[in-house]
Image 1 (cartoon, protein in one colour):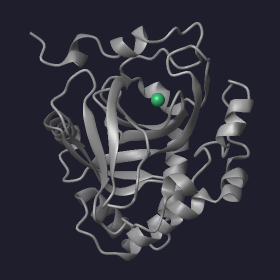
Image 2 (cartoon, helix red, strand yellow):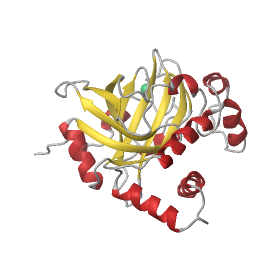
Image 3 (cartoon, rainbow, N blue to C red):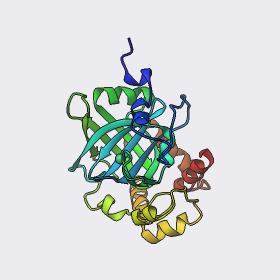
Image 4 (tube, rainbow, N blue to C red):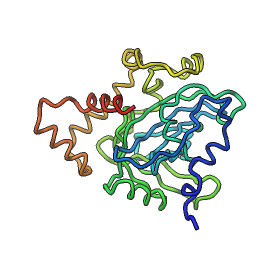
Length: 268
Ligand code: MN
C-alpha cells in the first residue's frame, strides 16, 4: 500500500483543479530525479486574496505553500503558510494572468527564484525527511531571498496543513528590511503587478529585464543580503564553505551573482 499520495498520482490535484483550455498555466508532469541543484520559486499572486506562493522542488514536483503576508527577513516574525497542492516544475516560469472564474484567477508575478538546499546537508533525503516531520530547515539562494529559513508544521496534516515560515537568525536576518514592501517587481521581467495584469498572457522576453529591475531597485536588496553573507563568517554548509574557499583561491573568479545568473540561463 502506498504511504505517500505523490507515489500514486503526482499532480493529480493540480490537474483536477484546472481547465488547461482556459488557463495559460502549464499542464505539467512530474519530472525524473536529476543531480542539479533543487529549485525554489516565490510567486506573488493577486487572486481573491493577495498572497505569495512559496514553492520548493522535491521529488520531481514543487511543494507549495500559500503565504498571505509573504516572507519576512525578521526572525521574530512568523508567517502563516498554508500548504496547497503540489505544482509542476514548469510552473516556475509562469508569470501572467489566470482568467477570472478559473481556479486561482488573477495576476501572477515571478517574485523570486533560485536554488535551495537543506541546512544541514543530506540532499533531497534530508529535505523529504524534514518535510514529512513538519520541520523543514533550508538555505535559499535567490535574488530577493537568501540565507536560512524554516517551515514548521503547526497541525497534523489535514485537508490544508498549516505551517509557519520563519527566518533563521543568521547573518542575512534583519528587522530593518520589509522585503515584500520593498520589492514590487518581477524577478525576471521587472514588471509590476499592474504591468503584468495589463500585458498579454504571452511570456515576455528578458530583453529589458536589467533596466526595469534596476529602476525599481530590487537588485539592491539582494546585493545587501549578499554583501552581508560574504562579510560574515558562517557555520554554513559544506557547499557554502567550499564555494567560499574556491572564491578565495581564485581572485579572477566571476562574482557569485553573475555566475549564478548565467548558469540559470543556460539551464532553462
Ligand atoms: Mn496562489
